Image (cartoon, rainbow, N blue to C red; front, side, top):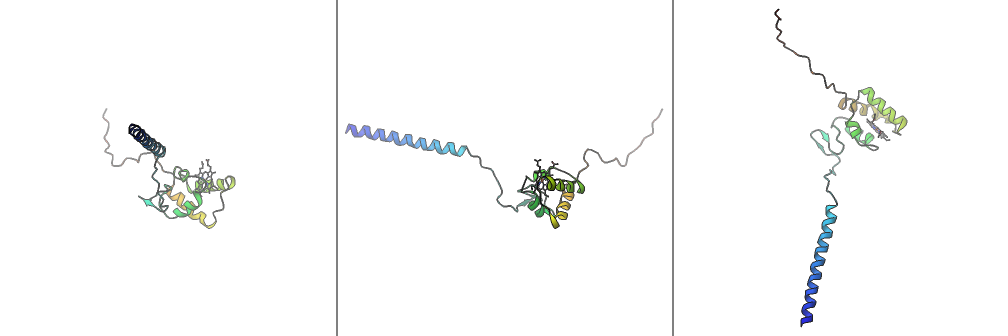
Length: 139
Ligand code: HEC
């Protein structure tokens, strides 16, 4: 009778111990991973921006995604601002040194998209003043 009681208590302790062991393990494995929100919808567009790449939605977007996002992030595009000639030069440079393929008939649409949506902006200069009320200096 006494032995049976000791045995049951030991068994209970073992089960509780096991329970906490499993609980701890599941907790530590889940906390090692961080859930990152990603869009599995590769066509998703929000506020005029293609979610997966950050590129502006405009004519030619899909050609740019197809030709320009397989080697590097689209961030290289979105953080650059170049003239039409500048974009053409960059493409030529990548073709000559980075194995970028011939864009063929798509080149024009790609360059137009880039030149239109990622053109240099003139920031740092304020617009000239208008409607100024001049007054004459008195001596
Ligand atoms: C075959 C691979 C490949 C493809 C496709 C590709 N690039 Fe690149 N691109 C590169 C490499 C490599 C670099 C250099 C990356 C670095 O410096 O880390 C680069 C750099 C750039 C840069 C930065 C240039 C600089 O002056 O630092 C821009 C902008 C760029 N690419 C735009 C584009 C555009 C636009 C397209 C589509 C027409 C494109 N890339 C397609 C390989 C590629």
